[in-house]
Length: 535
Image: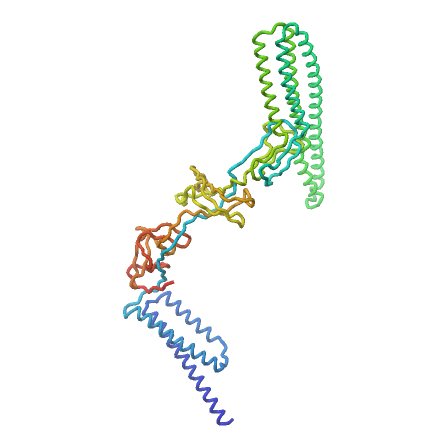
């Protein structure tokens, strides 16, 4: 090995030894700085232990790292890091000593400054989308349904067809109504005729009674046939159900077999059919119509017999004449009402407003009695969300407050339109007050019956003094905060206003810029020395 090469290696070795000494010196200075900080700032106990643990952890991690040769650039960088570490430790020590000022140092506390700004208080909850306007459609006529154009859940617009009646049935009912009017007028005129017309009255009554008797006989025969069909259908279904039950017993020792499962389904289907068979229901509806027809025929026959008796008795009394006149007027009114109702549904029943069909009771081809509900329509133009408000939020809300309603992924504007005056119990037994939020800009995407999120804006303040919610404390004397003034902890009573999720308004007791302790621990006491750590 040449002298020149040997000299170069010795020089490199000296530089490495010098760097190692610098590292030791830096670590020694940092350790001494930490010791001074722990001692002079009072960071003993848990805080000191945690800092010491962290230091030891870093040392162990450093020892585990594999030593690799450094190039000249890396060596220069390492020197800079070493001296920056030494300089940083010295700065920290200088800052701590400057804060301490030769006196006993205080506990480190996290602080933030009170700020002036805007704050909004809200109530977040959820509710069910419903409507303010509902229309139930009832049948005013005893006519067969021809077509039902909607199903439950369908959205419709004002003027859309909902259902229509059978045209032939409508015409027949109109003719019957007109005949009743004519009959009433004829009865009255015939009854007030003089004795010369008695024979004519008797003939008319006899003819009408003969026709009515035939109509009554035909109607009764048809009703008997309907009853027979209903009874037979029910009997057949019951017999089928009994056979299925017997088959099910035969397979009960193989409950996992397909045959057993299919038989169970058939038994259930048969049971449903026995209760809800459409054919039976249709016959029963038809039976109701024909029973009413029979009642009408018998009533009319009674009138004819009365007419016959009146004609046979000769002279009509004044009382009988007045009674007949009143009966005539009654039938005219009934017939006029019937005609009016029939004409009103000639073009079917249409939607009166935009909405959603929520119930459909009418069945195509079925007959309905007057007064029966056909369907139900709920408006999508006048919609709202029903929410429940607890006693803690009740004093924050009032009619007219604005709200944001979220249905699915879409937001709508709303406002409180109603607050109930009576509380009710929720599922947990707590008293809540029902409140309605009217959606002011609904559209076709609104779905009735779904859950919606609601955020009600209950209050807003501008230029308010604000501090974090976590900084507010409460004791027997009321609310207060800890402030840091000249490195001394000061307890300040405050009065708070509205609050958001993170900030609270201070109406009395604080000014903008005051340094407030944000993380209060049990060991903090008024008057103690602290070192503020602004966040």
